[in-house]
Length: 229
Image 1: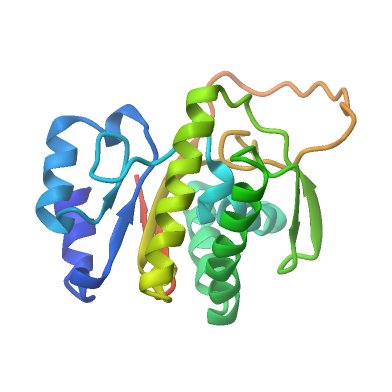
Image 2: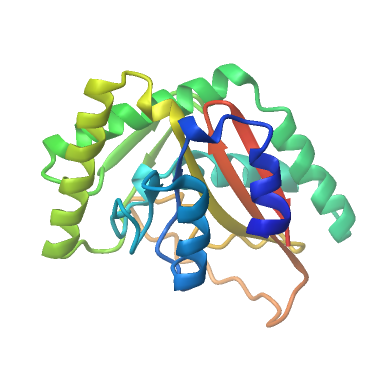
């Protein structure tokens, strides 16, 4: 995917100005993958085992987690897709319809999150207000251990120092992630968090094996790169 899709797509942009960010999934951090990304981005790589460490348990610092997947999934299933082709068409349409002004707000929101996380001593943000969707989400993530706090604090300090030198630095980060879209509408909690104060105690049975699409995206201020697998 990197060699056949991602890098050719980057040829349409000034890669010398972009940083690439990915989470710490094992498939992302193999030596071959890291070496390949370093060949393209050099030291402008934010990743586990990369020049800049991507802090663990930091879905609140990744635009695809704190905005894109939840927003897209809230609309994709409204038309009740019955086939994978229909599901794919819905995904592409919803993403294509996102206005540039919304991207700008999502990216700008990232800088506000840095301030909040630094003020909270690198804890998860307990209450997040998405002005774009006009929805309040209570976000109770996985427990952060002491080492995680330290990694998140170092990352926030590094990012804010970069922004102090280059004011539009946050617009140059190409954040990447993948999510599953099940045909039956099941939403995987890993990528889409809509938390409640109380346990709704809902029991839902789903087939053990259901058809799905795995979608990979890279998002930055200039737009989005989308690829299905």
